[in-house]
Length: 238
Image (cartoon, rainbow, N blue to C red):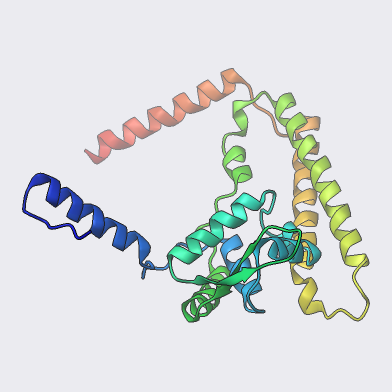
């Protein structure tokens, strides 16, 4: 049945609805903001079409679950849906296996190949978009008493040591003939963990020995001094 737009409010509403539906169904020409999981998905699809279950298993086998957040398959589906909306991946068919539900196969598009390389270049050289939670917490470490702050940092150090041990074990378990190219992320992780642990233990020692400390009274006096200096500078500038 054909619907005619007669210029009425109902007709205009129906026309707007049809236009919105058409726009939502079209691939978005604007590339989505890059994401680590999106990049890994696109590069996995360079190997050929595959369904989400196989993709997740391959990520786990390759250790990519140590590189990106793959705690739930839902996040993987959400990423693929976002890539599909932007025309970077497409449905390539359905895999049917007796005794198992049908699985949708996804393939990378030409646009997806270009965007994957663009994201790879950007992620290799970009640093200004990285704002770790830990650095934000350090900037207001004085929000906790020194002893409590030291306790929390000691917990972090313990977890970092566990992560470092796991990384060293992972690298030691790699086949001897595996080229270094495929262990760069673990090598980088090991270097970062060692550096952070060394720095963190120095801060913990300073807190334990009282070389780094603060009190509520000291903070109030310090902030009061800085506020007074700021007001004096503002008056002089005015």
